[in-house]
Length: 441
Image (cartoon, rainbow, N blue to C red; front, side, top):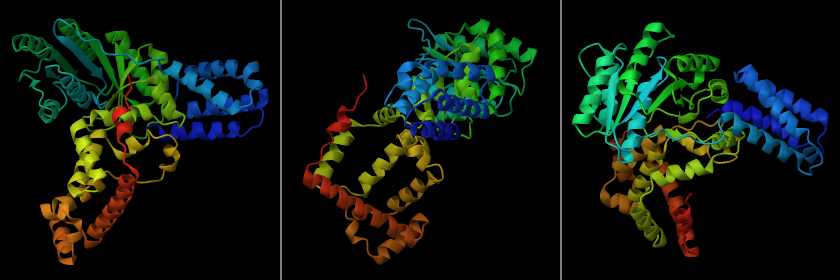
């Protein structure tokens, strides 16, 4: 997430952290370089100027100049200003406690509105809301079918009409929700390649019809200042409540993320950093600021783990580890837990210090597919007792999984080494209490 921006910030701050003493000159030189980093990231130039002015004012104070750890203080000042720039605190979406919660999704074509609608539906369903997705994008080919496909993956119904009238779709969807005891509707509206009056009028009419509790503008973070400009234009017409940044897993320079709230004056409420329907996060300014400065995001990582964490299964796993009986079935279960948490690259980027180390490493989630295929080609007996995997059995497993004998041998060797390591843990007294008690209130 925003790897280029993070790497440039880290490189700049590393230079000044190596200075034994801060002077007005080296502070000025550093801030000039940071300003260049921000402009290269396509941050709005007024936003960049104000950011540098604020940092400069605080960095040139006597407390910083006299500090024995000047580099750390400069980093802290920049972190604090990034948090302010991004919105200070997270902003929850507004839900209707007594009636139907109505959520309107708007944005340009290709911004990821439909996928986000399904992600939000999944999230709300898991919070015990009875959700209805509404297909009000009547123009884009296959938009309705895409929403129906996504809805089927998360077992959420999709309302649509044969008629090409988005206003009628919204109106009848609201009536359908009332008649069927549905307490949350998410209306996916049409996007355009550019802003035009016809589209704005239609979205404005739909807003009047459903009277949303929450209107969200979905923006492609890879489009930089174009995203900020379209966000501003949409807000003038629709007056939405919050912003959703999508495609932060791509080669986003960061300009939209750092500029959009300051320019539009509306909070960023969610970030989407992948195509999977579980890859949606509530936006926390302090956490993104930490990632940008290469400090990771352990809190989000632990939250993801807790979402995928089954206490009963964890207790069973702990008991097996104590008795040194961890087998391939257990290994397969752990792979599925990791896959539920998101992509490997996004998970590892949350660990402090790993950002730069991973920048040239190809983290292929498809490697899991190969491992799963090999384990699934084993018999129950072989999974429980890997020691019986002789040459002929390994050949059969390779054929059954569509892999090579070398792949099978490599996996068995790695698993054997992991078992030895876990055996050492169990001899020393394995303790899983850290995981159980690692909670954030």
